[in-house]
Length: 414
Image 1 (cartoon, helix red, strand yellow):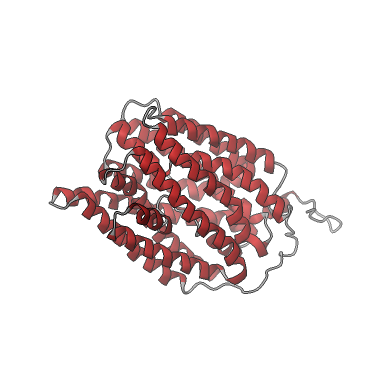
Image 2 (cartoon, one colour; image 1 turned 90 degrees about the vertical axis):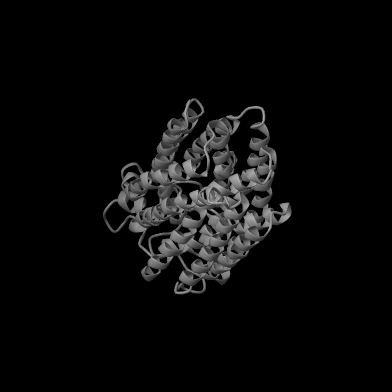
């Protein structure tokens, strides 16, 4: 199964590359097409409905029929979405195609593309490719690959402005990038083809009985992720619009900023496994998230674009230190047979709540421009508190193995 890693890394690289420039240009494309802040928020909310449907489908489909097949099908849908966005500016087609194309579902700059409907199929394949002791390290490495690809992809966001200076219309430049994203989806299909997975049910490995039932784990993750979804929904693509309104930042400046952020957050992903070993997965997630929220709040008080951009960079660096531990923890404490189901349905609440925030945040920006920053920080802090309380007494196999007393009379308690 370890032979799957290069193909999974390549798939993540392509997805992150596309998501990086789409996250920057999509809300700006809507703005130059005449959409108000409230209508941009509505588009993002409605496209989230499409994303929720895809996520639920992966949860039902991937564990039973195959995670590789789920990746290929989602890539085909993303290809169709990119082509549709390149061909039309009709409202409902934009909503449907942006949902299928995964616009804004990559977690933003520095996230490494570790979000959206595809990741419940990807995460179990990663977890099954390595031992428990190396799981967090692999999750950090694939995020490193994604963030480096995203750094290059962010530079592509300058293309519409460059084309505009050379006589192209804004819409034509944006449509070209949407067509390019469809081509990248085709490449994602090709690199997914060599992936191999074990068919049928997978029992827990000896000594790695899940410490929590699937239902309880899904419920606890669902609650914490619902709060996180409310917070992230205020950011996502709406954050690029905030930079545009607050500081007059265009696609070129935002593309450079997001490239710098991607490069700066690459190394923390490689250090994430050490932080998790030092603090434990749950504490690592908790402490790094608190630091990221403080950085986010301070952005609202910055007088110039690059000061706010520096704080956004710090926020994403702290997120990078905790994200692989959070993802690896969820896979480590779940039943191997139902990992796609856990990943999908525990994140479904975040997708649902993330649909609420953009329309609220977009509308509120008309009267209070910084509202999305405050709203995001509030719900993300609730998420941190809920996550710590829910999982502070639960350990993944690698941590239980380290705590296990020596001697044949002891066993791992579920």
